[in-house]
Image (cartoon, one colour):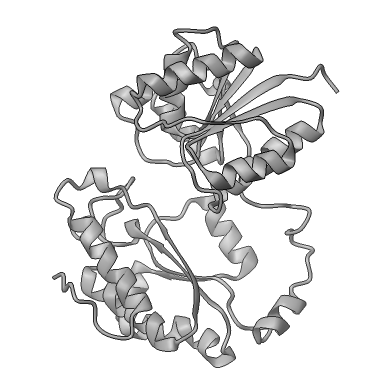
Length: 327
């Protein structure tokens, strides 16, 4: 192994249960196990305090109330100086800006950023990626790297590290029979279904064919109607009485209905069709887990997108019609 490094991870949130937080904790633990001195700074959090104490990892609460929180930048500079940090890994955009501010007060030899989303960069954020003080950027897929390059970020600064899958546990050779038996699913039942797809890159098309995933493109939804599509999509789970997980990407909706997303895609379902989907989910009585993605309220100052999202989520979980009716 190369000489141990002194690394500071900056996470400008207080959650411990999201995918980003879980991956961060595993990364910090793995680096420590390899002999590196790892320090973690998050927003104040009893959960992070307890987890890092149990793991023997130095942890600092830092308010990080905004991207221009000067007091937090000063606190980060003190942490960097105290531990003689060699590498700062900024986990989110706010952490990046605060680290750059801290770098005006103390030397940061290596500054690493993460990039896990594909929406365009505004001029301020573009500067945060192209500035020479940023040593490298970790992108979670090739398409995000291509997007950064198109926006002027030098390609040789970007390293693609695919995120989110433990390939030792999940790979094409895994026998899925046990989990199918547990969920009461037959061999022909679909485990993953996507509805309302408008654009798929060639690699995704290849994976869909390989895995035989059921994808309902908008052309099919328009032709058959949403009621027919959602009924067919839910039938395997309904028949098996299995666990239904819903991942609601807000950019599934047409931009005319939901402009408050990172990267809008035209020709999506209207609110009525989306409401029909979520009401059908609730009617199964099988909803066991739910996640919400791609909501970006700052892109819709009117607040309309957020209001519609609240209505849709209420339809998925509530037995009665939501109180807020949104046209």
